[in-house]
Image (cartoon, rainbow, N blue to C red; front, side):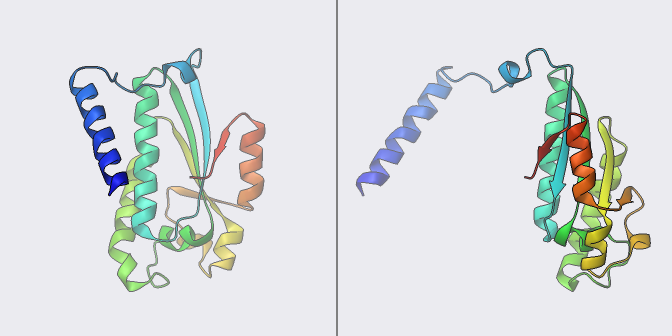
Length: 165
């Protein structure tokens, strides 16, 4: 009961502070100071289509936020592991309950592929093999690479930040 009262008091204080103008709008000025571009290689493995779609939405929000703050994004989205099955044109290997949401993932990938700052999508061929899918069935916006680990290492060597959300 005591913890609940403390939490309620803290929430009320924060709310009043915000309403009174005490909390400033969030920005990334300090972190982005002096940067003209932001290079990120995302390592994406989500095997649930809702989680994968949420991850793609967060990446898109990050892209838009960088642009709004005057930083040119350069994003590589590298897929491997369980995400592999959700990025196929052939839905047979997907769980039936995942198919509708996987179609939303495919649409999001298509939309993002045309966005400024998304330099590419990659699918690990090792994951294609271990997940029992086929390289020729990967969504057309996604390039199949021999080994996603090698690809991610190479991007890091070229200055991309590695992010495994």
